[in-house]
View 1 (cartoon, rainbow, N blue to C red):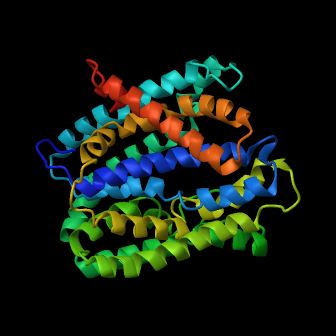
View 2 (view 1 turned 90 degrees about the horizontal axis):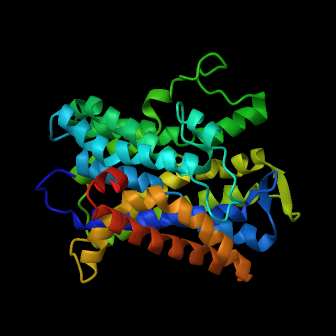
View 3 (view 1 turned 120 degrees about the vertical axis):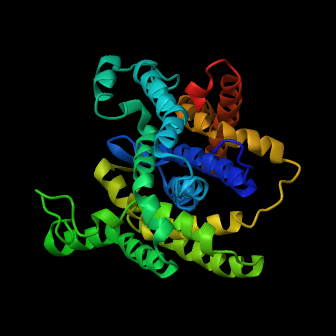
Length: 367
């Protein structure tokens, strides 16, 4: 956040909503991941995971769109931008990566390979904290922002639209790779090979598309509520249908399903954060939230939660694992369990993040 810059109300509402969506996504995971890698106990779990999780996969793109809308193109010198991001993002990420590496999670069996996790930190996030991938990704986005800022300040609207159209085509890549496997027995596309991962689409694909999109929406999209809903509602429904239909179609219909993680990877192709359906739902929700222009009575709480949302994200897996162990032991229906786990996790994580933020040096822990 730039110092002395007034709050943008809809971004605070969006950031808090997206944070809860991410936690809800992770609350769904134990209902289709486990056993040999992919485990779905029954058709009810399969249905509820499909319905709930498919609507939420746009949470991460929403975070990137929020950062872009707020920070891109850069309005401060590059060195100052990186110093602020280091304090806000990199230092807390390092703190929590260390904690996940050495602290056992209650509800997970209590065993942890601390030495192995610490070694893994040299190259990646520790095994118990897969959600920390987001921190690495957003650091990469911040590194790219100074490179793209001069271009986006000079390019015409038409030029930006051409880039976004090319990027939109790259969102088909997960499906095109599956088609390539089915037809040719290999997943490489347009110049990719086992000796070259940098194909024709590489440099215009991925999260940088959301960065440019955030700038485009801020600069050129100022629609009425009527037009926003006329565009966003069909876009969300189509995107959701794409996302959910692929996942559901690739679930074996003989239960319980207990197969390797490869099955879950195949099922999740439509859930990829830069896949077509996810991108459509992200754009639709962002456009709707952008129409929120008044703070409302609950805004002070939303504003505070928005400020500590990164801390909520970083710590929430510690809480979620314990909440899952307790709540699923009650034998309640799957959707109630999923939402119960998410609500408890969000509430406790928000409270702890809020407390830590008020401590001396708290910004180095929760951002």
